[in-house]
Image 1 (tube, one colour):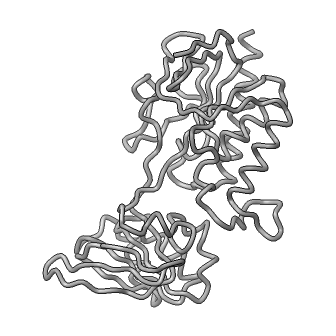
Image 2 (cartoon, rainbow, N blue to C red):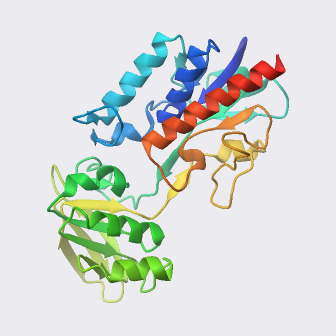
Image 3 (cartoon, rainbow, N blue to C red):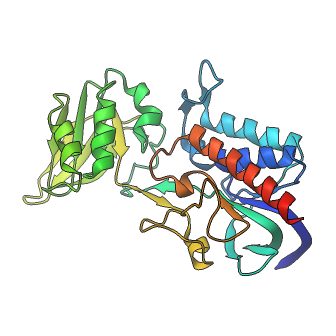
Amino acid sequence: MQNSDKIHNTIIIGSGPAGLTAALYAARAELKPLVLAGYKPGGQLMDTTEVENYPGFVNGIQGPELMDNMMKQIARFGAEVINENAESVDFSKSPFTVKTEKTEYKAKTVIIATGAEAKWLDLPNEQRLRGHGVSACATCDGFFFKGKEVVVVGGGDTAMEEATFLTRFATKVTIIHRRDEFRASKIMLKRAQDNPKISFVTDVTVTDVLGENSVEGVKFKDNKTGEEKVVNAQGYFSAIGHVPTTKIFAVAGVETDEKGYIKVQGFSKTNIEGVFVAGDVNDPRYRQAVVAAGMGCMAALDVEKYLAEHE
């Protein structure tokens, strides 16, 4: 493993809207940030086709194009981007150490912006059809299902909330759940049950998403009889939860909640002085690109202030 002798002002781990916005503000403040973008730069928006709810784009923009624009913008101000995954961190002493597979980097501050990933059922065609009718974000993609029938998989509050939201656009929403009982709160469940556009299929196991180039249906198996059935749908929404990418930070002493999301003190500070956080990695509620970008801005401004106070 190579050792980088340079001590960076800040290392930003992650390259979604939070990480790249943090890099933009840090670079403009002449902090010369290093961005560890991972082997798949751009975050979850790289799997999103049309983004219509990010301010400033009248006709919308493709997710990968938006992230490419952000990358070019931070490069213009001198941010350094390296496509390596952070594999471990040492926050026990300053300067902090961030190790990738290839190199050991050091920094006075770190911004964690590693995001969260939607949970999936690992069905044969689930990933193949992502962005072509398969989604994990109703508020991001619901608009594209005007006049269509969709399926929501899940039984918690998220599933009820996503299904209720989708009734604004879809003609029919079918909630498919593997059990007879729901984890959702009574008020969220009743709201969904009272909605005439929502129907329920329970005690079944989803076995595949159907369709060549776009979603055409969802196949499921009755848990009691083993009988297989298909529900017609042009959209499939996974609503079985998200997993924040926080494992290496929790091991290094960063405080997380019971679901693994990083706790903040104030807006972006973690329990470790000099370590900050932004984006979905500490946001289980909103999970929107524009919110993540705002949090990236806050983290960079907090880093700038911290460095000024500790010089």
